[in-house]
Image 1: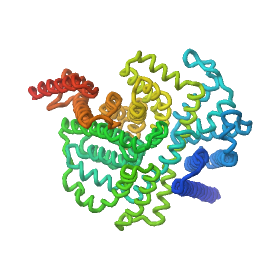
Image 2 (image 1 turned 180 degrees about the vertical axis):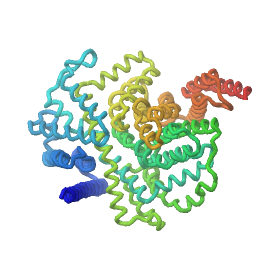
Image 3 (image 1 turned 120 degrees about the vertical axis):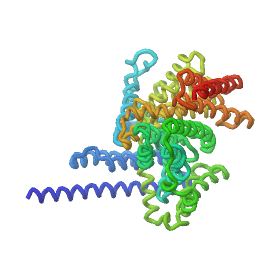
Image 4 (image 1 turned 90 degrees about the horizontal axis):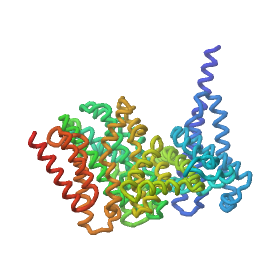
Length: 625
């Protein structure tokens, strides 16, 4: 009898899971089709679009991530949250024309009730999707807005009523603000584009291409990881997702070659983190930046080209030095695919990216048109080969998977909106910006270091999208006040918000890679940090010489800055790894580190001194070789 009951319980559980999956599939597919239609025909009220996207995103999280392992408890609580999510979405849809005008000025008690409901839902789905850190940060922000009059010193502010706080949070200055706006259009569209590339087997093509290009080089598997992660990252936009996808292939290969487990994890983590910094398809934060600055996405893409080259040059050089130091060889020709074969079998999978670039750069069209063209071309290009051909089922699956993959971006953007709204309401953003200016005593170098630390601290345990959204309202204005170009200021905080994923003590990308490598997470985090140090210098370069991202200086000036920057990155790599022609002394490493700093800061004198220091260190090392 008990066995019979157990079987019936198992069958019921399967039916329950099946129902959740079906419901999630319907919501995801509906969201993608609706978004594709709205963006294709144009139009639509921004608040309504954001409301639909957030409602669908929250429902997906609630359906796919139950609150409890207990089926009964999960069914009850999740049903309450699902009904509340639908009710909130319907309330905004029905009343949005009035809410737009009254929410910030005089919200009704019913408005406040739904605002509280929406806030609780957003915090809960964020907790389920991304863990506690970001949700806790948003809760602290709300508590601060309510009880700011009890805080000391510069943090003291008037305590606002719940009605006033919710009026700010439940609107286009808060949950439904700029961050969610970018996620609801550009970011979601490009995530779907990445899903279509994956469905057409472009991911496999990128891995094979990386193997063919870098596999035979010294320490080949690590260089394969760099190339593969940079290519895959352009369609992923998430450092952790990139690690999980490419790391399962690259990390075991690195360990087999002779790399320590923690170093293999670090290489994959740093390479994957850089993926969201590589044009043309960057992370969601890049779209938010375009919205904040009010400039075309193409300008963000153009500005990211040189920094991305610097970032991956630094990482590639560090890996090369480690391979040289440990005498690690590349993979044999028999273990690797032929570049000719790879290109012959998969050249057509590059067509969607080429079309996207042509529409974005050649036609100077919007990112939305470029994304739509890329998706359509992806389907057409897949038909060139039978092995990659997408049928109707594949297309529907890509649409569904794209929406599922976007849930993290959607809910974290909504939560970051809560924090930004509190900063705006209480004036905390201006106070922190003023503090940066005050403590820097007029020194841009000190202000940049303080801004870097704030961006990294805010990004610890938090995805780069909300970390950037918060820093964009706090740190970037302070740098602009000190004379930094607005685009350079935002790129600066964007870089360090992303690099927080490989900065201990909470390095999400490194920890994800450590799990695959079976390595100590903290050791992987510190190894990743040392590998990324070259990338840490890159933002300082384009702040001190913004022409490398704005391209508004003579060609020779830009070229000289790029060359000196690359030489500086090479010097820093040798200083960190402690290897030139042989193991470097501490004095040689110190000279190289100083040279790197001097070369990164543009100037003829500093460049000459930097080069001289490198020559001195190299000559001394060579004489001992």
